[in-house]
Image 1 (cartoon, rainbow, N blue to C red):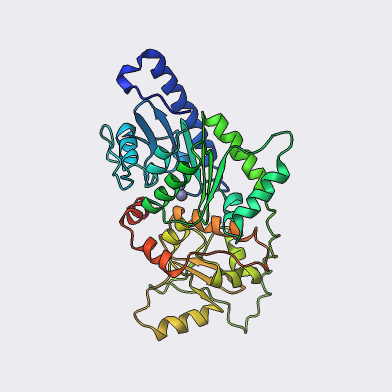
Image 2: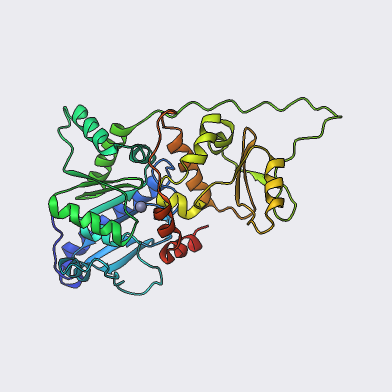
Amino acid sequence: MNAPTTAPDARGATGKTADARQRATLTDYCASIGADPLLVQGAGGNASWKDGATLWVKASGTWLAEARRRDIFVPVDLAHLRAAVAAGQLDVAPRPLGEGGLRPSIETLLHALMPQPVVLHLHAVELLAQLVRPGFAERLRALAEAEQGAAGPLPPWLALAYHKPGLPLARAVADGLRRQPDTQIVFLQNHGVVIGAADAGAVDALLRRLLWLCATPPRPPVPVPAPVAVDMDAPAPTPPRASDGRPMAPVPDDGVQQLALDPQLFERLARDWAICPDHVVFLGAAPRRHDSAADFHTAQAACRHAPWPELLFIRAAGVYMADGFSAAKLAQLRCYYDVLARQDEHRPLTVLDQAQLAELLDWDAEKYRVALSR
Ligand SMILES: [Zn+2]
């Protein structure tokens, strides 16, 4: 299954045609899955294909959804990465080929380590909903065993504990692949999945099988409270105000609003916030959560140096955002709701601990990615 190692300019017309086909198919595939918020959130997730000694990998900060509108792939020197991996130098910096100015994905090494020609890494909601549950590996094993029938067993897979994306995660994946070199699926605790196969079609077939295997029905939404009859003598309920005194806007997503309206989800905000790296990198280490807008303003006034929140959860009232709350952040927030809505209300989740949060939030590569987001 290893990709050929001939240099790109020595492959001849057949190699070029195969590469063009791989690129066209994968571009279409990325655009289609990128449009599904249950599979891809904003700039999250990445894809790659190997073409001889070149690895084409999604550029950091670009969106899979834009694959047809702009060139989101960066060519990097695969032979260089493989030589470094063979020498045990997993901290190697990928060497981009050609010009373009975009950085290769922070997960480039993950793609180089997987031996298959096409590799997809996603934070798909149905999978993430399993990967935040304690004992997820045993649960996946039981699901996979129960499911194998006509489709046969799943291809070789691994389930890894949480590691910070980048070098620590690459090390864990490299160790796993040493133990089981024909691995095609890697489940990453509190993170997502990596799938490798011959082409986009084969990757998609595996992804669909995993989604079906892991699917959990979301809890039904609680009804949105009906507007109260206008009482001219009663003060109108006021939304929380931003730092400039103007009202904060409700987040325009009915699912996200459930995080404040559904009492079970509102309680979960406090204890089950840090479910995965992208969530924390885009939305911060802890939520701002208050019982009322008045309670929020009292707390804010009591601590003059407290930064004004970009995102605010008010119990039973709504979820509010400040001006400039980006589409990338909104996509992360929606993902958070989708994952929480798939949990049994009585079961705790595995969340990132303080040390894991600290290493994530002081990370230059992630700051670059957030700066590129919009
Ligand atoms: Zn990831």
